[in-house]
Length: 179
Image (cartoon, rainbow, N blue to C red; front, side, top):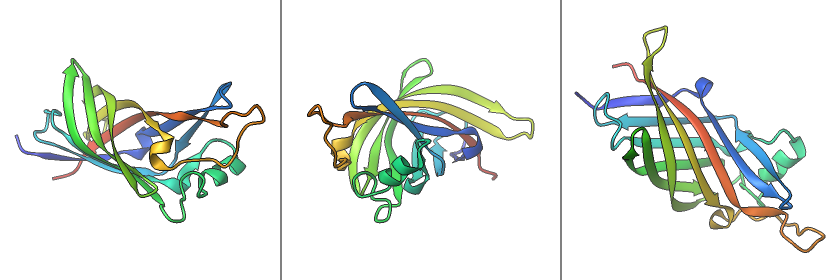
């Protein structure tokens, strides 16, 4: 079978992150605007699929307007200078069963680093409109220092305000492009 092109369906997808705050709890956020593509070597063969994901830095939402504006600032995403976060895969390989390993370059604030993510392939199905869909759950962790994400504050107790690890969690659904 021939190579297939897929498009991310934002209505059936979400991208979340979590970071420790004052080391007593976590703050969770999400990105509301994103897009992406996937190319599979064969229609029903997701081994060696390639992924591209584009995230609008201005769409960050932590359910707190002041914090969201601070996240768009140079302390965090520098959204005015770098309005888009990007991920381009370099490898997608099976681990066991429906579990895969996804490697690629993540770019935040113009800084690109290779990361590895764990992926669960949820399956493939045809919806009520006859559109083929494929679903993936993606989990991973990055270090904020790798991307120059440094808030300006130190807690009164002398520690950092935020943890260094950012946990990533996404549920992504793709649809087949029309031929």
